[in-house]
Image (cartoon, rainbow, N blue to C red):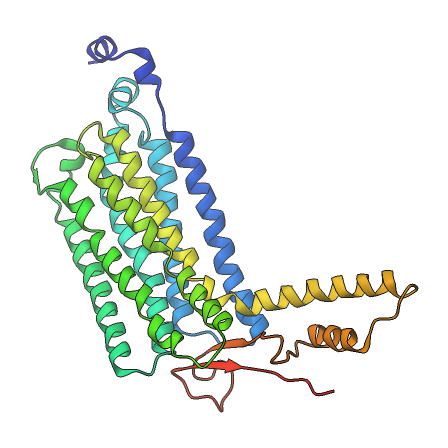
Length: 352
């Protein structure tokens, strides 16, 4: 086999590798996923926000994402992922057995990783929206997510009979390409619904355009996983996973890592507001203090400027400044006198 392979393919072809890219992308998402989850809990601590089921879902999603990343590392190092199959057969054919195991493991872990962050966003929506129609849509989306989660998991185990077909090629499988391609369609559909859900309620708020845009941006950031789903869907249609499997499988694995990671990171964005406000006030305080020290010997600040600086330092904001505070209120998380299932727009006024 070695002689046949070496004469059939050029040296340049056999030496091609995508492994550095696999390792680099996976490492980036290990760092980003870890930092994003840590910042989520730091932000909630700063804001005095109680932990909820959405946080449990995010931790669960993180565990699965780390499992997916670990699978990518091991598949690359021990399974020959990122190399041409001919090169693996030439140097160490036993790697194809390990690769065959991961062609089962990776999609199963991927399906577990993409759903918890999306369910965490749905949980947030259910604690904001009071409209029966909107809440019903949230439950429908959650049901689709759970159904797709279970369905793809079962399908993954039934893809080939026996499962050892992936490394022995003895047995039979259903259309693997179709499974990889269409299994992500539910993610795109539910992402589109989740993207549209908040819009009517936000634009009905009796608030400034700036405030509405800020809230909308928060929700949009939580839905950026839609773009990774679309890219993954496209890549799977232009890639044949059943030809030169260890090479073409690179596209499959790397987009699984990216999509699951983007969902995990994006679902943390809506929780960062307390952290962003905290950092902003600290930076503004330092800037104001330095500016005041530099100009104190030249010109004393006007009374209006002093009031503006005081409001900035204390977090108090006037209506003229149009710095509205937004609270995404959940039961027991912020204030006991606010009903769950509402968006709270908080304006502070200073009287001088």
